[in-house]
Length: 218
Image (cartoon, rainbow, N blue to C red; front, side, top):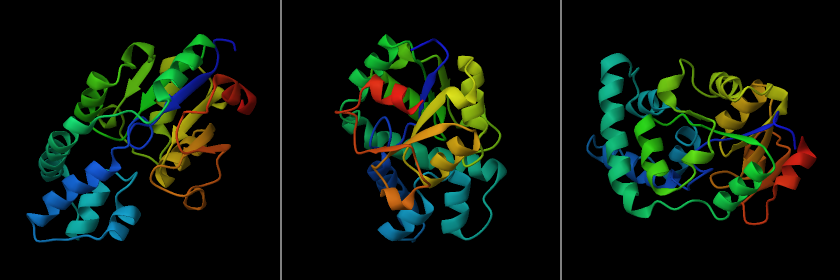
């Protein structure tokens, strides 16, 4: 493969299966406020959504500005405390990234999560050195489904959007990648394929995936 193709990974549900721990953190956060969202509520209004959306939805009022920063920090700190002992990459992803790098793919991470969460995962999953672009929520003004984070990743990697393939697990994430004009592999950790926009390929994990599969899609 030439140097002009890139693979960009979302983080939550794509590099690590964090969503169950985000649910636990939000449960604890909302319980303090005498709220008890159901699993259904979370599936519909949490996975792949920004904290401003989630907090505004469940607290039933706009949460913005300084209050958003404080509440977000409280919830994300809870998440990191709960998740730290359990950090584990999704099966096969590290060797899949090695295979991509060996085939001259440029690699990036593009998450809607705060940088501190990304740092925590990169401290335990040894992939940082492979990444030509690392972006978190602090790096963009607009969140998924807006394509900003993916377009910025492509720019960082110096690759045209049509030569990028994105790994995503949420409706808003897949939509963001498609809105950026990229091809998408749906990672079925949080949703079924029917719940996602149409992707080029669907996987449960990376154990059977090779760089040649990605070359075939591009």
